Image (cartoon, rainbow, N blue to C red; front, top):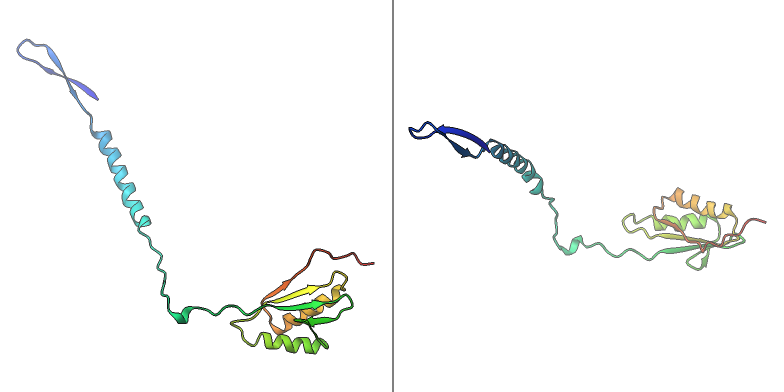
Length: 146
């Protein structure tokens, strides 16, 4: 607030005249207006999503996982059926990766006493054939080598 004096009547006394200084208020209002102008485009930013429920866009359920078990003596079973040798294992993996869109997960279950080289052989065969979904299932019971 500013206080100025003005001349009164003929008496010569100056009377106080009180006015509100509006300059700081205008400055604050201009700053708020600029901030509003800057933030409005950010608030109206939208992400476009295609939410159509077309039946063709629904993907089929994933195929059931395939369980590969590695015994303590190095025997390999594919969903409970014995695998003959490395070539037979790779041929089975080849059929798995034939359908790239719905590739099932290979769950490798090594025995706790199985040699590490047998597990590596299965993983290497999967890598050579291009298997993408591999999981190693353990019970946390690996024993130390004798």
